[in-house]
Amino acid sequence: MKRFLLPLAAFAVLVGFLAIGLTHDPRDVPSPLIGKPAPAFTLPQLHDVGKSFSAADMKGRVWLLNVWASWCVSCREEHPVLVDFAKTNRVPVIGLDYKDQVADAKQWLEKLGNPYTVVAVDADGRAGIDYGVYGVPETYVIDKQGIIRMKHTGPITPESLARKILPLVAELSR
Image (cartoon, rainbow, N blue to C red; front, side, top):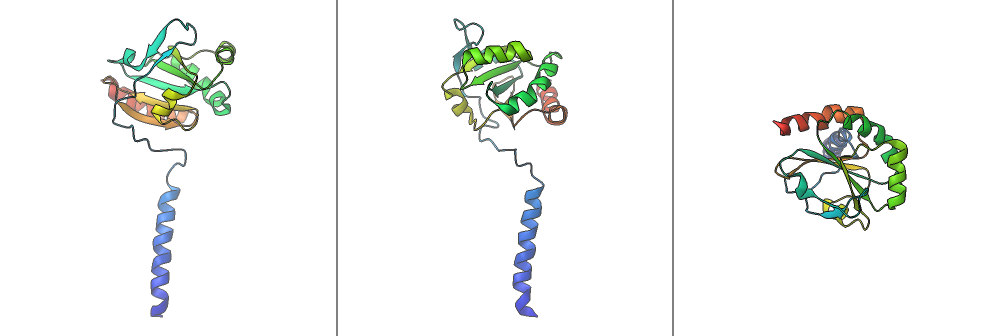
């Protein structure tokens, strides 16, 4: 009987770890940038290449940085959510057009609506690399001091917006 106790105990511990693992969202990828200053960048704007946008331009404001691309299938899923959210004017939503063609990005926004206050063009993906982007869409919540407070991986849904992002935005906006 004793010879079965050790394997049974090991099996119970393994099942416990698996059960804990099943409670986590596999799309939530922790970011080492949470609680750290948002990486600096200065990139041309999509609709006015003569102008640039810098993360430093948003100091003193809570804002969302949404990394997207016209070639991204999941971005099409979240886009209507962002368009509706932008109408509330709660916080600026800055688009980071990631490794995309300018003409394709412009056509996307003309066809589907533009939820962004500004769209910065990250043609070579360098800014995305600095933010730890491993796939689009990804969204960062950045506070008034320029500190990244949240990274949302995958499309923003009405549920994720209501349960995770908006409460944090409200807290940071106080």
